[in-house]
Length: 333
Figure 1 (cartoon, helix red, strand yellow):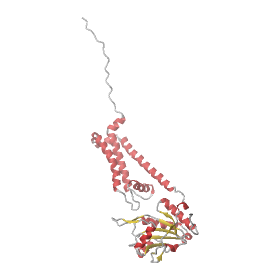
Figure 2 (cartoon, helix red, strand yellow; figure 1 turned 180 degrees about the horizontal axis):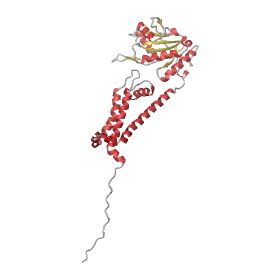
Figure 3 (cartoon, rainbow, N blue to C red; figure 1 turned 120 degrees about the vertical axis):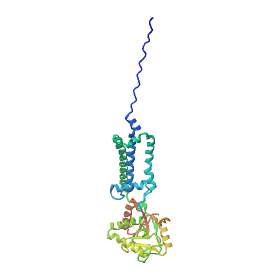
Figure 4 (cartoon, rainbow, N blue to C red; figure 1 turned 30 degrees about the horizontal axis):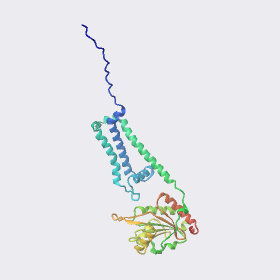
């Protein structure tokens, strides 16, 4: 008897073994952690530079100062920064890397072997490169922003001119002489506010006034007067004011440092001229605005400026315009 035979069935071909792509190996292996750790180290190093780096002189100093203002709530008057803001900036990326460590914890132990890091130098270079590109972008943006700030619009002149009265209150200058702002009618007057114990804004105000005076000719300065109002009338005596004026190299009567006959009267003058002054209850420091008033020859306030870069340029233009006037123009009704 013949035994029936069966036709052979189709051959079973085993499925090819799955081969991880380079991208998959990077995302599931130690390469990703090498990349993240390197990027984190580069980022933290950059932040340390922006915290402790120089804030004066050259490209680096300008960038560090601006970065502190943008990201660390820096105070340009004191040079201080918010350490809470610093902590947030430094800890945020640590959480991202920490999450990656938890997800890829099985590859953490092998990272203790330096040979593994050498085997993933491309990942480390990529991590450093990403941070370098980001930093370069920030530097480029900062330089572009600084260049735009230098492109100041022309002085608007009459469009921003005001016509405000000045108080005619009796005052005393640093020599103990009676003084009123009306005494300077016929001359152009720069009025600002300072106090002797100030170590933040006032030195900048004094430097700005000194720079201004050196930019004008002797003939122009003959018609230009500077009046510094005391922002601390309860404590500033004529002796203190005289020592401050002389110590800064100002000459009398071109520069007058004045206080009221009584603190209440001086406070009223400051209020009427809108010199805002508040005392910090914790430090005792007086917080105040950096304000410059330009008074024309008729004794009226014509312009109000600050230490803003745009205003610094306009401050000079405004003074020159007022010095060219033989009398103050009558504003249109």
